[in-house]
Picture 1 (spheres, helix red, strand yellow):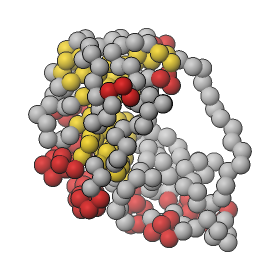
Picture 2: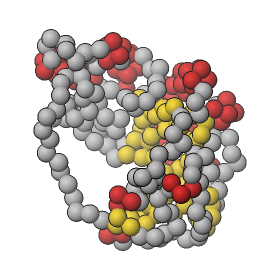
Picture 3: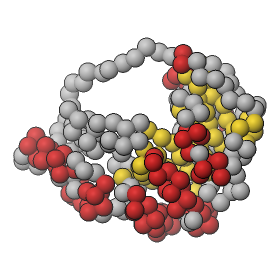
Length: 265
């Protein structure tokens, strides 16, 4: 089971699933502007554990962090943060994100609401993010979050002209073989790029190079230039997943050149 859930369409068509669900819950979210880089780099766990879900948005070259979104699950009785936090200030009016329409954002000034209307940053009826964009994302060990952020920040002057925004977020460790968070607490470093394909193609190998000591895992559905060898080094169950897919699809009907390049088939 753990090898099939993140299957990348590599072994066949799933015709039936059983969902493990939980009761609905309410969430309230707040946005902070100007959280200090030093706070994030020195206390990443304090920043990312401030709520049920925390997202940090940055252009990489600004003196303080552009925005930090803190989402509290109300049934967990998580305390609301003060107006001033980690050097930043709480925004008590609406904001914008990634150059998009302010009306597209979910309510973020403390109004409680159902989880499905607060955990996403963008309302379901709007185009998420900017829309005209390229996306890249890497998963690195959260234990090395400060090293990863510092390494990418060193490229800030080259990244920023081609970037709408980066989102930093976290995921708990899980058992799924080909997931980005397989068996390690994870920091996700997501780039929403402007539609500058040549610049993005030049930048992604440089970002991957500075993250290489941390064994970055690519988001399977976003732009990456990581080699088969680099992916295999970061995904310890890749060979077992490939063997499973070969057993389920012995005639290789669902194999492709792309899946072969990244070592999944």
